[in-house]
Image: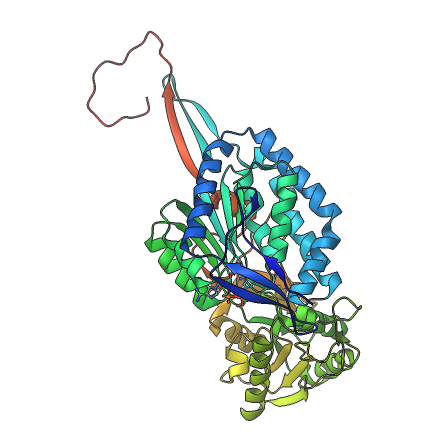
Length: 498
Ligand code: NAD
């Protein structure tokens, strides 16, 4: 099979230069190299910025009605072709097709939200704050906005940001993960077809070289980053140092607290779905199950029964769980299983050497379950980002809460209970940004904002919802008086409302 070339999309067209560096793109279900993606150097990033800068100057003048129409048309096109997009995701990421479709649908919710941009950008107006003086507020675009996204949601994560950025009148440069770059190119094509002017949406592929140029480029006003915590911190520190507005969403270790009164069948379903869906490569995956005794034994039994029925295999063939994204990542996750055994955790289900419905060279790892995990073990401390679920046994709600609050990550968490008072107490006391009550993956809907606490987010603005609108706009307040015959005369005192 010949590998296809994947290149940048700048100013409404595919880039036609020669890249000095490229990266391999794999089909994780077969292990084959299916694509070669061009890596941008400084000159390519600069070319994209030049195009975006010029486009932004015109696009900010487009009426709100026009911007909403383009987003609406894009929503219709992407929805009609969501299977094409989902196939591209499965082919490069490995997640099963139904999951890839779910990703596209959740991304389109943000597009639907952004179609309401005329309403979302409404300012306020106060008449007569002082005699004959009115005050009003407006929100204006930033200019050129960069989006740097991770491999695990190649279509949805850019959609958390660009619909609102574009709706607000900005131009965008997306730097997708080099591991699964195709869906961002399809997105660019759909947007062009939807009538978006050239240069408003650009894609540059690459690695640290492209990212560093984005961070330092003086004409880029903001950076929205999603990825691992060390890189998020780096992006935040360097982006803000260069004077940019930055929101950098990082890694996660999401706990699910199961109280003794919980419906254990519901909890077991949730633990399996949220622990092993997308092979655990979700920032909202559950990776630590905190069981308040005496439920651990029964819960583990129910989880194990469900795990035995999971089919691991090629995502195009109706499996429940696909491969991991690369061989390197699979090996890293497997090394955590080795470490868990060495550190004394009880390996209940071992996913190494799994039975799979797929090619022998795919990047396979089966669902894995550990019991008797303690807070000092590396499988508990680190984000593994694979299909490994760790059960930690605690004696009380308080001990479970303390565990969650002491962890460095604070992206999502869930409580399973039938006690409304306990759930309410948990939502009040837990130091985590997104909370599920009997819901395992509490990804907020588009008109709320997505973001974690602690080392799961750098910057103070979450993604999409009203916080997203705020991030991609800058406020202005106008104080105005239209001449009437009553001139105030000279007064050097500080203006007061009279
Ligand atoms: P990653 O940090 O390796 O990569 C993210 C982006 O940063 C990619 O575009 C990549 O090319 C770029 N990058 C990688 N190394 C870089 C470097 N040294 N300098 C500059 N840029 C660099 O993350 P990933 O492996 O693609 O994605 C998985 C991670 O993303 C997990 O930690 C997961 O929790 C996190 N994630 C978080 C959220 C969230 O909302 N908090 C959502 C999805 C994924």
